[in-house]
Length: 361
Ligand SMILES: Nc1ncnc2c1ncn2[C@@H]1O[C@H](COP(=O)(O)OP(=O)(O)OP(=O)(O)O)[C@@H](O)[C@H]1O
Image (cartoon, rainbow, N blue to C red):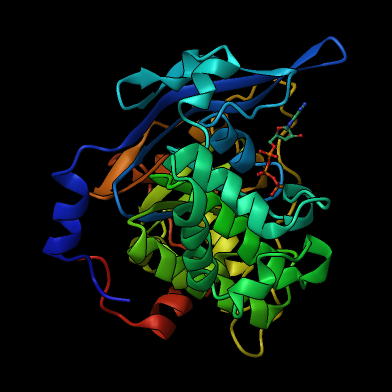
């Protein structure tokens, strides 16, 4: 990792986002009660970047990105806010016909469990071919050759033979490659990977991450990774958004979030990382539970679990405070009037451990 460079600044600051979600609120109706899963979350996505969204289970990562593809469960809806993409407000889309303009060919998704994404009764060649025909308009031998090339690109050897095989004839890692192949076959601009490696063992995980990196270059993809595993993120993401209770509470380049985290939730998340744990010290675990999303949340949603919470954290929701042109966090600690609160020892040590040169500071 390196400190924030001019190149990075130009990449993010002088560019228009290709997708821009603003103040998005998503609600679900559950047995007559309303739950607010996403609470005025905003996110800008830039062409060619890989952005990771991290956070505990239930923080809203999947729900948020599913709203970019019209994949919310039937009892959920975008209640307010906008999701701008190519002049459309995706938040206002209602019909499947509208979503068909976007789904697959503009924004595609790779899910955690490849088996549910594949049709067990069709050969994998046929499944990829259908995507190539539908989204790239190719036919006959040309379409088949494209499928074979994609199979090679996703690291499936002997594609001529594999073309005619069924999903059950593939291992878990290979199946995930097939799912990725189907997404690529739609030639999307944005690829959303929802915990793409969780179901796989560690060596295979690393291979899939490397594969996605290679494909990103070749197919000029913009990638959103959703994961609760910051270790995965460290290897792939240009930027990291940290999600808590339905909001992105901190976002910055990977360097900024890892080396110079500002939100107490990010501190807690980093402190609990096994890969980056500090030798000889017990692994930190975040105390308490996330808020009940059926209730209205007052102040900073993390305050009840934050041992360093200020009085104001229980009263008023913090706005974003800028740390650098690419880094911002919703915490009152960044208000110029706030008392100086030191990050936990573990975070300070991590900084030392990973290098002192940090984020232009
Ligand atoms: N169909 C639904 N009905 C009611 N609540 C829902 C529905 N889908 C999601 N939720 C709720 O929305 C919140 C956010 O869920 P989401 O799946 O986005 O979390 P996540 O951060 O992706 O978690 P995980 O890492 O476990 O997938 C959770 O509280 C979840 O229970």
